[in-house]
Length: 152
Length: 210
Image (cartoon, rainbow over all chains, first blue to last red; front, side, top):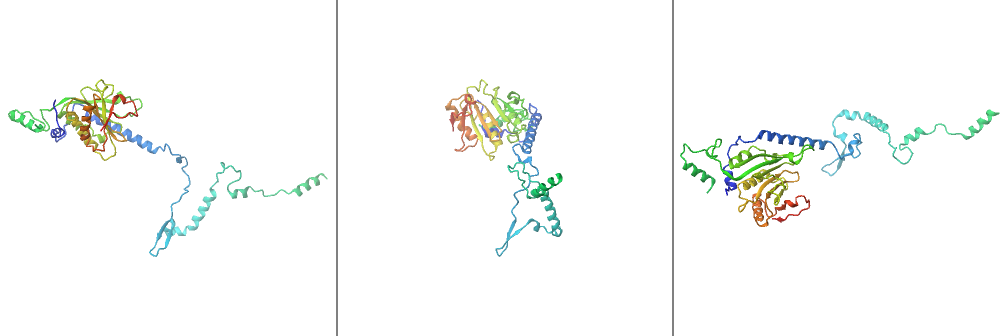
């Protein structure tokens, strides 16, 4: 039986790659590359398809949890909150402060409470109660008087 | 006597002008080849990319080799294991044995199996060492128990499998011990032998463990 140790076989390894082989090495490599491309595309598709996530049904979901404000502690041990707007050095930001408040207020007004799934029939927003409130209350005395007077 | 000594003696015996070129004397145009003990076939299992593709469509013989020089030429022209897509398999089997349990030569045998876990191991080096030990017949010194060797590229860990023609415990234990050395396994590395008869049983226990 012919035997070669691993070391002997390594000695017989050509130092430069041999190009002559009795099969189509280029085609073989091309098949493998093609499979790799298909697998990569499928992987990408899987990652971007959000198959098991339900949150993509609500693209305009409001941000409920806000980032914690940055707190800096000076040498004396005093801690100071740094709100986001204060960190910007833009002077116009301070000037436009009033307009920002207004726009925020408008945004708040535009929000419609979604109370269709709430068991109570009472509207969730207090302003809706004011709007729906009857302007003229029912006056029982006036009603009694008017009919009788007309008949007479 | 080493391969170099044999080649040197051969070159000395023949006059210099008429001496046939070996891979050591002329890298590109060598004439002398070092024959292997048997012919080997390289098979490749292509991962399925369409549902209609069956196992027989995916498993294909790539080429055959009978000498050390042919082996190196093929090895240098095929992608290395780390370049293969997931779910690919390389198989190198003796003569015309198909890398399937149903093949007559495999039906009464089994496989020594080892799964490389983690990304630290050099899969290319281990595969080359395994191939050289198998085709050089040094992994199986007493008898031709080895039918072939398989490398499976998998997400959970690449698998090496050494397919044997029998389930005989004594010769297989010796082969398993050698296989551990080839794979550079320490005492902790567990090598398991599964008979092909239990291949369909998902909860099959190995008949030998090393």
